Image (cartoon, rainbow, N blue to C red; front, side, top):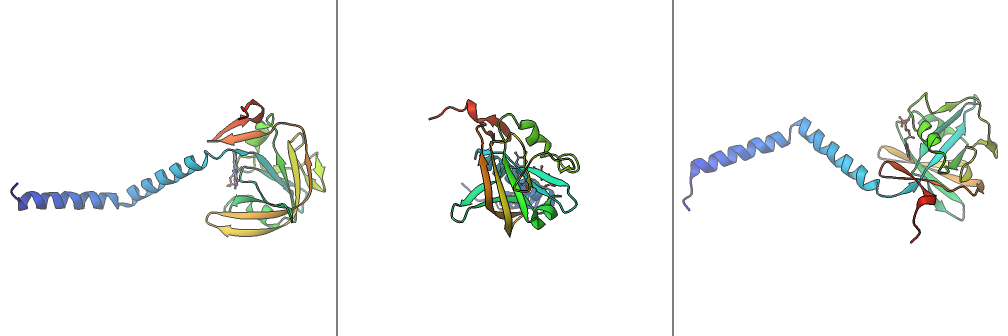
Length: 193
Ligand SMILES: Cc1cc2nc3c(=O)[nH]c(=O)nc-3n(C[C@H](O)[C@H](O)[C@H](O)COP(=O)(O)O)c2cc1C
């Protein structure tokens, strides 16, 4: 086939236009957004439980939020961790508190999970909290509770990892609430393999 310099010029100009279009700020932003959504979707395939983390502020308000990044870290010493968005409205409470509780929600507590995932002031601050364990506010009727004292904070990316030492815990008979791909599930309906 004969080499046609005019066609080649046209092809190069067209490729350059496409490359320029790919590099415009809006298309870069859109590609980045798509990639973040894809990553979020893939991470969502990892099924977790659902917890509410709570702490009392010095002025006796209870701050809490729904969290599924909770994980066990060490048995000896007993350590757990969770991650908090560094720009969260609750960052200042949870990064300063000396003690916090983790309530592992039961499958009939989906309303509590939804309520404490609302942005402030809706789900976050409670003035008349009823249940306490080891001096910490807890969610009654949960599947398990952990009371944690002190913490280490590790800053990474857009979240901080908060590590707490478990000083008290309790396990109850209620089947836990689960979370996967943005939806809630009940553990008692699961098929054991
Ligand atoms: C199932 C579920 C799990 C969540 N897990 C976390 C988490 O691990 N860490 C976190 O910072 N926010 C988590 N969130 C979001 C918070 O509950 C809350 O919606 C959010 O912090 C509110 O906005 P803010 O970050 O600006 O305070 C979760 C929300 C839901 C519904």
